[in-house]
Structure formats: C-alpha cells, structure tokens
Image (cartoon, helix red, strand yellow):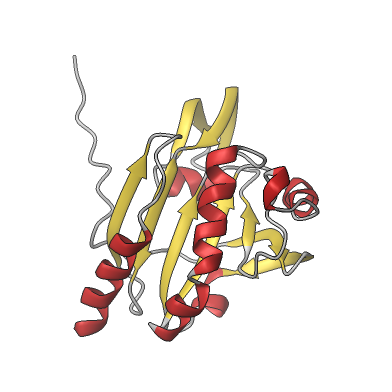
Length: 182
C-alpha cells in the first residue's frame, strides 16, 4: 500500500512560534514570531548546521542585503536545529573563519524541531509522539530552505536547496517585489 502526502504549504497561513536564539550577539529568551513580524513580509531561512561553509556564505549574503529587505517592508530570520549557545559561539568568528560575526537579524534555535517539522524542512528519520514531540533516530537537521511570507502571514514562496547550492538573493528580491505589488 502506498500513501500520498500533501506537503504543499504555499498559500497556507503561518502559525506563531516562540524560540530561543540570538540577535546582535545576545541571547533571545523568547523570540515571538508574530511580535517580530508584525505587518512586514518575512523571509525564513532554514539551514542545516552552524559552522558549515555554505551556510555561513548564505547568512553573510543575507546580511549584505538586510537594508534592501527593510526598504522593501521585509524582515528576515534564520533557523537551525543547533542550540542558541552554538549560534552565539558562531558569532565570535569572522568571515575568514567561516563565522557570522556582525549578523544583525535573529538566528533561532529549533532544538526541539517542532518548527522545522511544521515547515517540512526536517531531514532525517523521525517519528511523532502525541502529535508534538519528535523522537530522534539519528541526526535531524534542516534542509536548506527559504520561505517568503507576505504581510498577511501567507506563505507565498518556498525553495529548497541541496547543501552546496547557494541562495539567489536577486530571485528573493524579485519575489518580494511581486508580493509588494498586491
């Protein structure tokens, strides 16, 4: 017997979540998505692990365009399943050291993997207990993925990439321009 699952989140409304993380090299105890997002568009960048070359390159690219995103009524967050302590440690290193020093957008820790599961970015083998808790069978990490969400909290775009494929900022800006026209 085979099963068909619909993982399409395009057009769906996002749910609020609260995660720990870092912002401007300081801990965030309870990052609240809706309080942060307000009436802005939002880019959510899921990535596999800290200290991985391709991930730091993407985060640095996002940082380079952060003012452009703000001018286009768009905020940005990054999420991985690493701890907030690992995120903070990563900010101690500069670009030459594969670090993310001077990143000015939130980097969040989905250590329980609930948000990654909701957004269907979780890679690995897992099962769900009581519709909430994820039991780990091996290492569970996020696939590199980008969600673009409009000011009404609707997912408008989703892209997923193999780990060594770099993100395309110009394409993200193109999508945001279209979203802002409505």
